[in-house]
Image (cartoon, rainbow, N blue to C red; front, side, top):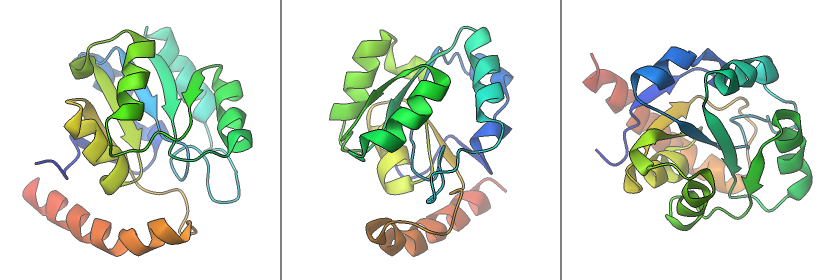
Length: 164
């Protein structure tokens, strides 16, 4: 189903590298807002160490953010020493396909990790990428995302029920 992720985790750092390897993932596309950074621009605890393990396993990464705020995106990109794409326009394919081109990896070997169903998950699924949803780091959000959260919570409940 287009709105359901392949996997769902509390936080990005809870994803075991073996999960990527078992699913033949060679690259990851990362969202920033409420996935890697909370509303107050605090980076998720343990991110650098988690990414080091991911990178050591041979998996590359890039950031695709719908935001245009370069300072917050660069904060994470410089910490992880990876490239980024601003104005990703998720769930449209443009930003994700641009990232795929930079990564040089087939879509079925890319995981997209983010906190929103209506941007990250749907965008990944439309591009035939492995969608991973994480819980938002913070309840604080921009107004547009706040409007969508109740519907996303409804979808998540149905998703979890369908998984048993």
